[in-house]
Amino acid sequence: MKRIGVLTSGGDAPGMNAAVRAVTRKAIYHGLEVYGIYHGYQGLMEGDIKRLELGSVGDIIQRGGTTLFSARCPEFKTREGQLQGIEQLKKHGIDALVVIGGDGSYMGAKALTEHGFPCIGVPGTIDNDIPGTEFTIGFDTALNTVIDAIDKIRDTATSHERTYVIEVMGRNAGDIALWAGLSGGAETIMIPEEDHDIEDVVAKLKRGHERGKKHSIIVVAEGVGSGVEIGKKIEEMTSFDTRVTVLGHVQRGGSPTAADRVLASRLGAKAVELLLEGKGGRAVGIEKNELVDYDIIEALGRPHKIDDKMYQLSQELSI
Ligand code: F6P
Image 1 (tube, rainbow, N blue to C red):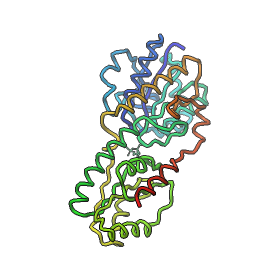
Image 2 (cartoon, rainbow, N blue to C red; image 1 turned 90 degrees about the vertical axis):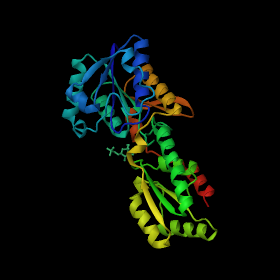
Image 3 (cartoon, rainbow, N blue to C red; image 1 turned 135 degrees about the vertical axis):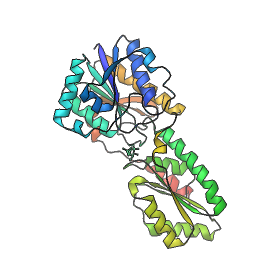
Image 4 (tube, rainbow, N blue to C red; image 1 turned 180 degrees about the vertical axis):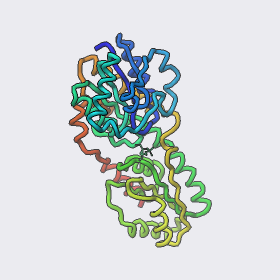
């Protein structure tokens, strides 16, 4: 192993830069050469590849987004696209690749691995929905952004005695909604992993109102459905003054938290360690604060699960 590549792919996540920095510096520390692949798998297919030196990753640990740029690339789902990518890697003399991204990016890394090209997957997505790790890079930062928004919205909810529905990202996973709802003190948290009956949501709101509670916060994961529609139904069924805020891409940006920077540094370095040990086709993660790694194909087969105990706790604390 002489030369490795690194790319970021899929939705950007705060902390991706810290991971790129860790991969680059750890590899150079151990005598490897590092090449950055720009614009994700699209850039890989097109040969958008440049050497990274120690200084190339200076002053990026604190920056959100990804300095390697990112893209969603449907063409890379095809065999032709994958082989074209491998051809570019070989042309640049790259022996192995570190892929930082979410589940779509892992699928690409899995495909390259199946074609015999060693890849390591590093979980980078705000959604926290990657199997084989308790936390993904970017989740903590997104969570803090959401909590900040909930706290601010709560000021208006209280002042105007309103009900607020706040729709958060997460694709098909409810982690952002659950953690933000719990830490933001939401009255109701709606996540795709659980069934929700709008009648129950309304009954709970009415019970609160009868107790004298004139404002409420409801956090809805985008995977449950449209927050706007849910807000409309709630207003119709309660006649409480209701507003909806869809937080959107504000959740993806911003300077990574210390927790995300540390996680990214640890996972990025672990990816390089595995390559130095001659291991490819692995996905790195963190469990009980220990670094772990799994066969990437096996990891992708595991379903992502919500923390049931945390959901139960959120129910008990929001009666
Ligand atoms: O995977 C990250 C994420 O922000 C999801 O939470 C969201 O569903 C999706 O990406 C949005 O994708 P795009 O930025 O391509 O609209």
